[in-house]
Length: 304
Image (tube, rainbow, N blue to C red; front, side, top):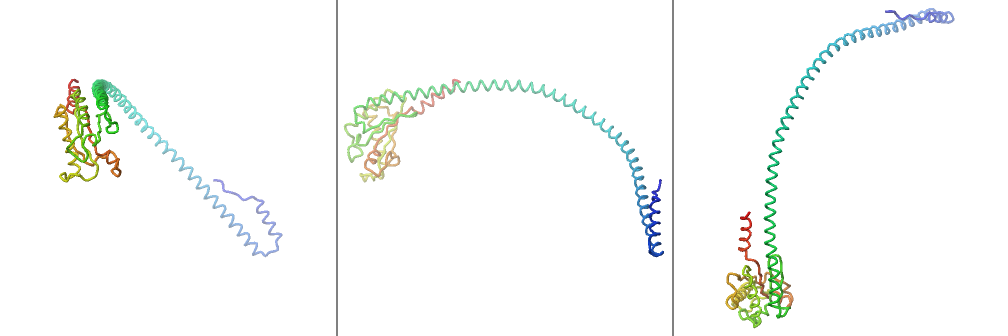
């Protein structure tokens, strides 16, 4: 290795400096020693630097050789991994092929199941159509019945009765004063015969219909102290009207049901006389007999 040399001009300059200086010989020697020490320190630093650089080059050469060897090993590992992946890919291709065959079988099974479900849906839709037709027929019958009742009761005061219709029943609401004599529970008016006769004669043309006779009162205590409460009053009145329908007007007893609601289903407020008058009433609720409707629906379902 070539050591660093100081330029000759450096010494010449220093020598001239010494000649031109007026300091003592001792100071000249000290300056020369100081300069020499600085030179030796710089020389030592340069020597250490180049020695370290040479060692790094040697280490780098060794590392490169090791890396070459490792790369060869890595290459072998990569080749092995490549073989493994190619084998895995082949396995997956085979699984996909098998799955495709299985899916085809499953698809056929699902297709058969879907066909069965479509048939069942079609059957149920047909059944629903028949049920709807039955209900529509009953609704038409109720509409016709309501018109017949309006004709049968047409000569009565219109403010004394009301006929309402719904999808389930026809309701005839008759005021107490049209059926019962004032201040009585068991004595009926002359016009009551026209009311009951018109209802009974109409219902005889509809043997599949039932009628519920439902009694109602206002919230005043019963005038007759023999009755415990208004519930009793309403039930007694409903029973009497039911008896007249069957015994005097020929309606089948299997078509009639009596019940009382007392003061617990008011039409209007009991705070006024008009409201109390509306609440004292008899309701005739006419609808298809439940057993007949159930039997008809059972017949439809059994046919299917």
